Image (cartoon, rainbow, N blue to C red):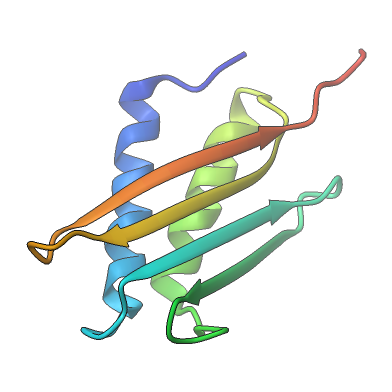
Length: 106
């Protein structure tokens, strides 16, 4: 099964907004990595070009849990997500999401 774009898009936007709230003006790029283990445990790592680790807050963590829960509801097998952020010359940001899935042989 797949999650609908109508459901995925606001989840991505929420995560993106919350990541940008963690970044400083001097940062040009950032990566949010999310892992989901077989028991449903979630790991989160946020880094930027200027910092090797950025502490996340409850708002970002809740947004990530909402993403994972949405995928669990439709049994996509989501095992990870990676959001890459890049600041453009005009100061606006771009975000690209990549998702990993564990395919079940059941």
